[in-house]
Length: 72
Image (cartoon, rainbow, N blue to C red; front, side):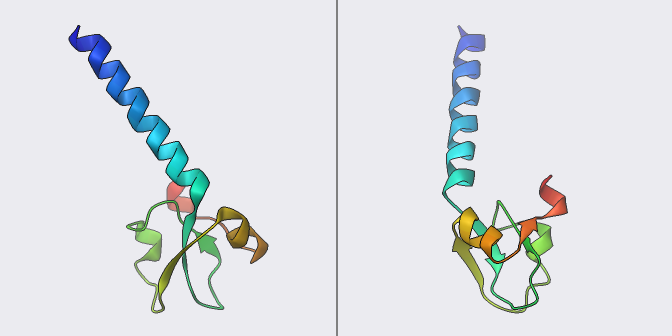
């Protein structure tokens, strides 16, 4: 029973993560930014001196941003 419950909870957690990733990404709102981030607390955003904003992944890629190397 415990094993089944654990698997169900883990599957739910994975689906929440994938939904969150599909809905948007975080970027440093700077003209010099080169990367987008899946989580706001990514260490790749720690040097951002501008506002950190949540945008669609499509918007980030249209700006020429690529996925942060810490989140590959």
